Image (cartoon, rainbow, N blue to C red; front, side, top):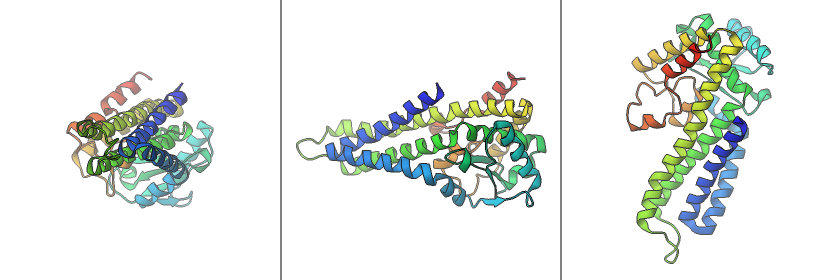
Length: 278
């Protein structure tokens, strides 16, 4: 059921992208938008993991360099029935973590130095279990493709607002065009949010089942959320990649209307759901 739901959501994003292309450039605009959407999906599938790891200056580590961390990931991957992913440490003192990769054989998990500094071993394992659950269910690939298309929709809509569309015969009503330019990015954000929020709840539950200790992740989430509200944002953090992290890196700063479209559920809701699994 989740596979079908995800497929529908990604299809909606692609259709939105093509529709806006048609509003701006007619049939030729629709064709160009469709080709671009297919290209973005293809590029994201094969390169998104490399790009995001490079963006955050993540450094791959082996068993000799970070034995405790490496052993946790190996133990969890064995429990999840997936190949051992690559392990990375991000040189940033703001605590956070994410997973990436297009499939089980090309997966990677990354944690910041700050996360290893403020969490105890059980809490770190709870976080890693959450990320391994994402890997097991291909969540990161889905989220990355959704974010790529949603971002492109917003960019295309802005382009349409600046330059209009069509010719003198088929150009749409300017009032409708302006409304579309505002509503289309909002619709894309809502669809992206629907993909990501549900996946976070599922990954939390998966983590609880992998470790057998929901309280480990509960404690970790509480610490991470508390830190994010009282300290600086991660270096190099961008809205386009915020959905990948276990805690939204902008959660402490996002207190405006935009918070309605956050890709993460409220931390207190996540902790409450974990409480029900005890």
